Length: 520
Image (cartoon, rainbow, N blue to C red; front, side):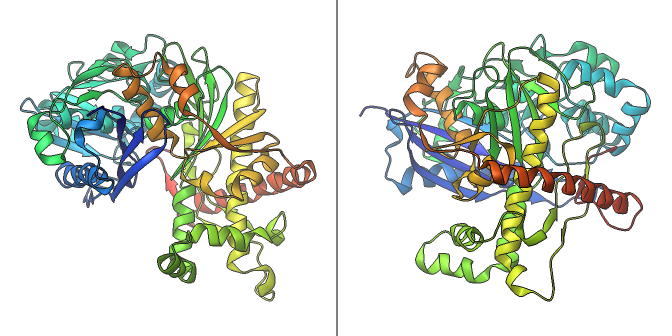
């Protein structure tokens, strides 16, 4: 039987999915999803990644994605993985997992503070393009100090998607887009930084070989095949980090292309042909998955997560309607919010601040400006609309920062990820930023981008651009409404003043931060 499908294991912050694509059309044909299990920890700020429980969830996803559409495992041409950055899994010499944590783990507060006080953090930023806070570097320092027996038993430190590859074929490798999120990587050489390792007095023998995305590194083992339903011998291909994979999945591999990958976090990015850094250390620069390309990136925290919280907490009717009718509850909320005017009757939302990697913290979540005496202008549709507008304003701010560094602002923004399914959000994004917004047919650009490298690795596509030309299509292009854009300019200024006040309340101990990086 001909092999015509590509499988991506997509490890998100909150869940894992196995997604199968048609290798000819790029259309998603099957998906299975499970929420990750995160082990409770007594360590302040720690969020452990339970590799045992999560491998069980992952293998079930793979099996279900095959079974859901009765796909013969022999039709899978290749399997790959992509994942959230910053989280790590460490193996001992027997291949046993001895440590794991997710991307927002903040246990290394003391170590980050030391890096800052010693003046090393700025040196690291100059080499790696990211301010140390939630990366592998400070966590290894924490481990060396607090769990020395674990630290000395490390054989390989892997990123989350590297761990998936290891579970499938026992290869221990990484690639530049993922490894550059560790604060242990040299952007220019696109390899591990000996100088950072030495200045932080860490071991240099635990890092895996760096290979390019799209490299075939093994075959699905008999053991993995028995557990997942995949065919033993299926090629396993190294995939990129989630954001960079998302950019490939929407065709963003040319200098200056601007994108928003909208999921739990929103990543506002621009493609670079050199590793340009933000001298104020607000944004991060990382390797793109294509050789000789990099990205500069802002990060809006918990956008998708906050929308899910709002639905679960206040929209039981819409949620129950979805269960009964199959109509997406977010679509129902979109319709409810559609009649709300620009500015949401004065309601503003305090969620994520603009990126500031050097002092990364977010004020307590708040809704402000609503009228308790006027239910017609303060109902859940208004609050939902205000949350959508707030994400658009945050994106406006991130691209303003990017332009101040690269000299280029976005004329076109490609919007992908789960949040791009909204019919209302893309227009608000265009109006707030003043850029044309494109929405791809395949919203899950991250999974498709990884699948592109899987297909490239086994020779289904000539190169990355060939795959993009064949698989990446767009369903909508929205022009900005310039009258609305002028209104958003005023609302953006108001939001910045409001946010400064809310940060001050948090700094004075009157409220708790929504999130704060170690050492911020």
